[in-house]
Length: 73
Image 1: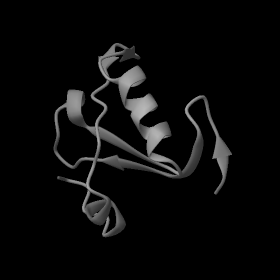
Image 2: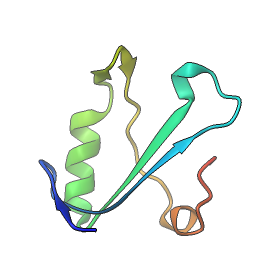
Image 3: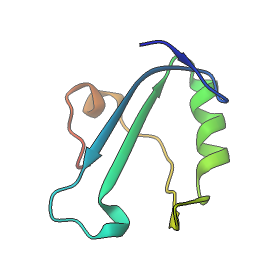
């Protein structure tokens, strides 16, 4: 998948619903960017913003865990 966004080229997006989680933490969205600079820009811009009445917690996730789909981390 190739997608150019406000932050840069996206390699892939994974949307994961946590089982039995409260509504504040029920959904995790993982976005892999082609360039680290794009990821940094996205985290700086999105962390702490509100979408749909919920505050976004943006950060970095270990690449190895993402590759192995260990998404509970």
